[in-house]
Length: 86
Image (cartoon, rainbow, N blue to C red):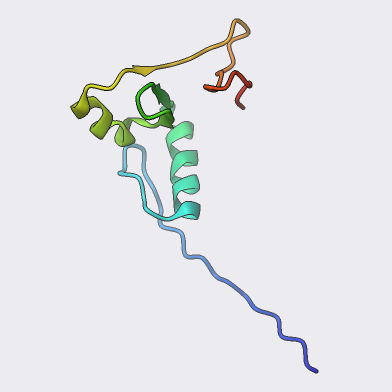
């Protein structure tokens, strides 16, 4: 039996700050890294229960959802369930 080794090549687009979010999982993480490097931060949507970057908030803003930045007394973000987020 010959062993076969598979190689997966992912072609990642070059993202800029304030680009719309991509649909793919790996692409989203690269996009989010660029957003954070540009100083953009996520806000927590109370209605959806999800952290969102500015370009992802458009639906929540249109629907009138409350967006908040939750911080602990130590300055770290706190998740909805009370565990400290990175």
